[in-house]
Length: 544
Image (cartoon, rainbow, N blue to C red; front, side, top):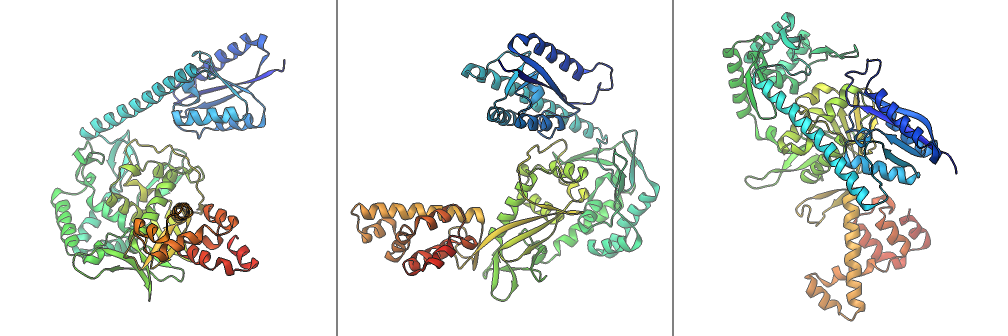
């Protein structure tokens, strides 16, 4: 009988107690080794121990775990032994994915304190029950932490994070930084004089007033850059400066344990001025469009907002050059979808502070206005060029800070392609222009914009409709009757029928999204109409 090569995996969620001579990891390893020794009659042999200390079981980003999965793929080990199931994972989804991975490489899984056999339906049920309770325990712990933070902030206590400009942290309390406090007073007083946030931002840069500079746990320094206009807005509205602690989750604030920097009278005067200036802004500045001021064409011309004629019409287009419009609703939807995918992606390549700030964004609970404010804050620019959107996203954690949750952590690590440079992420999104489109997405649009995925869905739907018409026609139903039943004209029915007579190679290329230059439906109809007259070179061209 061949030897069964066994690996031991041990994990502890916190670093507390790891400095002890005999800690929880040692106990788990010793127990697992003893179990492996007891199975010597089955030819079990201990091979290696993989350890992750101070890392949550709710994430797959664990060095020891990743090394073990790699060794499983290499065939170095074929049985994984753990003390308890939740040592491997506390996420049901992650655990199921790992079980599929284990099966792929013929690796077994054993928990020495919980007897079950995953080859039977009862064993699988038992395993799922154990995982459900493990995940329930983690979620309850998170709720307890949130409740503690809520109660602590209600008492005015500082609960961590980057301190605001004007304060330092000592003994877990906010204490006034005199030099920075004077800068805060200057900013509030100067705003009443300028009555403009943009003018105040320029004044701060010329005066050498910079954003808060802080030191990370690893000893690196962050921040200390010029204050952005969005950050200046946050400073002028921050009640921390009049002695309060705000709780963003429920919109409440309580008197803090720290000293105020400015008086209530000065703060209230600034709030009144901010409100009056907001009310006096032109309608153009209150555009609902997501990318106002951020969208450029490939030669650097900024797109402006265009409205439909008529009263109470929302801004619907981006315009940069004569005769060329991009419909805002469709373009904004693509950008929103891209941001959602980015937040759920694997960000391990980003700087730790940036990754931490971004993964604390609870996108699913944000309103549209909050998402718009977030995108306006963190997006440097979006370039439209040759049916591509090139999105430049800032990695400055201060830009993300206002929108982060108290204890929320996005544990998703989906795969997504993007480029990381010194201080930004660049995401390229292919799109398709459908000029004078008549799709239901936006019937009135001068130009329709679709993501590649949406375009492929429409093409699949078109072929499904085409084959349905063909089945009716070949079953004896006349063209005119099909047109009456479908409430379409004869020309449209013939356009769909033409699709079914394309070569199988072109049809497969279309359904797989592999047609030349991401052909859209209107172009596909033209290809089908002219297909009989194509030569072999033209047919090869459309198949890529």
